[in-house]
Length: 299
Ligand SMILES: Cc1ncc(C[n+]2csc(CCOP(=O)(O)OP(=O)(O)O)c2C)c(N)n1
Ligand code: SF4
Image 1 (cartoon, rainbow, N blue to C red):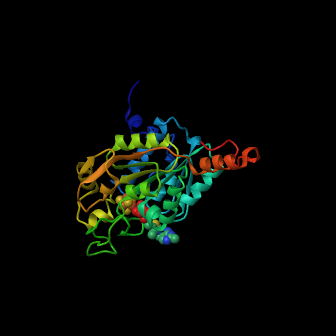
Image 2: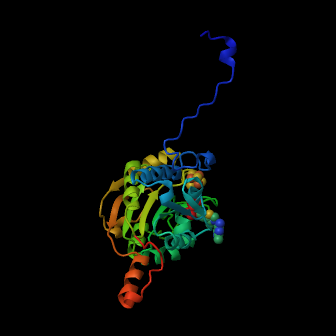
Image 3: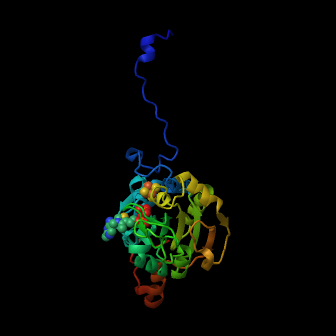
């Protein structure tokens, strides 16, 4: 075949290679809205890998998010996904656990959404051991609304509403989750890709209230306000400052500004879920008169 000048200059059919995780990602919604070097997309990539590793298909799982940069995950996960109102991802997903106990229900949202406006739902869902996997991206601020102080902002870190640095004690999220009743608790940074994927895979295969914190400081607003360099500098810093300590005492997991971060799996135990506990209790009390409220039963 002769290669002519016309042939070389004629438009070539576009060949875009398929994304390796396209089974679990809505490629028609790309490009996503996240800033370059933001850790949220990495966490979503880990989650897509975890769904595959856990042997789950898109029909086995739901993803619910609240509002915020992290809340946009619901728009990109190619499963039945729900972008709910701010702070209300948990009660929405509790409804899903009642309606579809045969599916895995995951909440993917920000620290402001889950722990600030949604904090009350968080502690009660944990107390009741609702059958939910919560993935909380902790970027230390309210990113989507411009970088306000969050309940996770480290002391002395600057935000738009704390220009002289925060003086409020932030929540230690793993400790909060565990003391409220979670049965699986882990923390990784967004650069612990393999560890984070493994934790997500493991937690997908458990039942009850499971909590994974992903440390991914906002590479745009938080980094700029605190003069921490580029997003990559930030990720590298947190990765290198992380100390893996499985079963570290939960009280010791506070995060101080630009200091070491303890990562690992801190809790992994099983107890009856809310629906499972309710059914066995009613069966004990009512005997044969008990009619299970959900066909198929809670796993
Ligand atoms: C009822 C209500 N209050 C306030 C807001 C404004 N708002 C939107 S996102 C957000 C905070 C998001 O912070 P976070 O959950 O940490 O998510 P991030 O953007 O940091 O990922 C706030 C206060 C809202 N949308 N609805
Ligand atoms: S503003 Fe911050 S949290 Fe939001 S997408 Fe950009 S880097 Fe990520």
